[in-house]
Length: 311
Image (tube, rainbow, N blue to C red; front, side):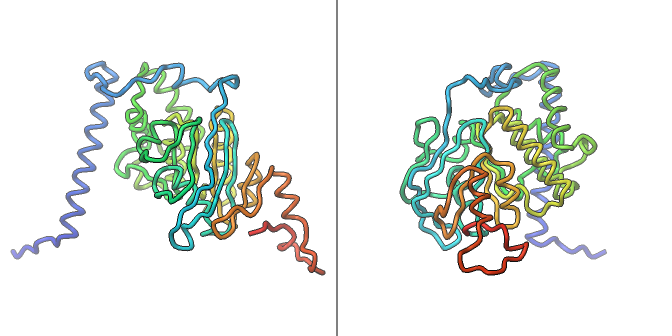
């Protein structure tokens, strides 16, 4: 029998698959071992109260902001003197035509793009010089449009893995309660034992949001959370955002023109981006009023044109 040797690409894919499968087996073993008390976690512990309870509304105000942020890249990634701010418990929308810079702001805040000038400040401290991992530890959780998940892990173990990464130690009962709450909130209970790789795109993205909340963030950075969704999925994401707001988490949403109106409808305030600059800012009601005002030279305005933002 003649055997055909696998090509380099097939061999690489095979090795990666085996490694991921081995990692999943290890995580499952470690989860069970820690439940029995056989393994001591080496990560820094997080208090049970911080892990399981909403933040107090009377806690000192924490603000995330950019100051005259500029990034000189190609046209779709450039920013010019962008200054925004968001407080804990607030939802702020960054909206504009795709490529206007709103998603670039999120990546810059998360440390994925080098800043040319300006500053990024969290709770009075500059984040410049820190990397994405450090910013994650400080409470900034970025959820890209294609939510990264562990494809060979079950839904449940994807969420549990975030608990481990954040170094949270608590009784198994509390872990279970927190896990069940996230599965219910993100409508993933029916697929909890399924591998992430076999989920629908909608389910994978909601799993990404569940993992982000499991990290106990101070600020959620959501890149186009409504795109490619139908009405039921959009309603589910609305519920997740409102839950985060109720927990005292600041939610910063970047959304393109198709879902700009909806993103603004769930936000408290917003910024309108055009060609890497802020074209307008204000409360939700102020921006909607601006969008509904017809241009001076328009004589007849169709229903589709009646509401438009200054993109």
